[in-house]
Image 1 (cartoon, rainbow, N blue to C red):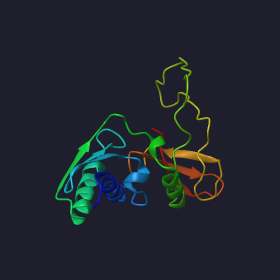
Image 2: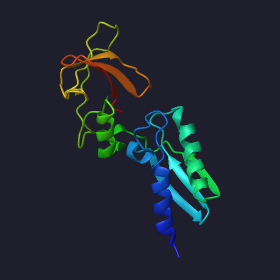
Image 3: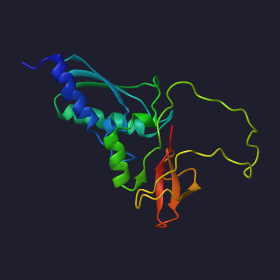
Image 4: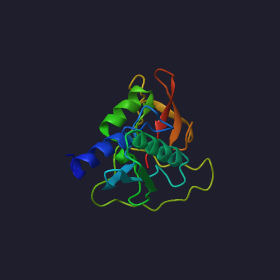
Length: 180
């Protein structure tokens, strides 16, 4: 007989193995959007998902794909809930997910959330496109050649969560998964 815990683990593995509809190189588990799985009985489950940002259009496709996969594995009742708290962050992307992004030619998000106190500096407000932008301390590395000599071409790319950059060493353009 399968215990509820073992069944929950299997259902979580199945739900987590669903590819992200916008970044199919990553699973929902690797992307970090799969938050919880709760079994109500052997054929009824509730799954919690956090969108990468509020209003993310992919959350609906993720939900449908999870329902399909779990139905295919004998779970009759599947409820997928969208949860906004705690908010998803790029820190939730697993190390394996970051590795896969690089291999796929997408620069993963830089750094992580600060630990401890965060220094806040008040300065001039950005009032025009020519006003200076705050500088990032950690460079975006080219996923093709590893160079830190890259430039921002556009703050938006194929999806709202990515920016378009170019490597000044190998001259290849690439997406950068923006830090959130």
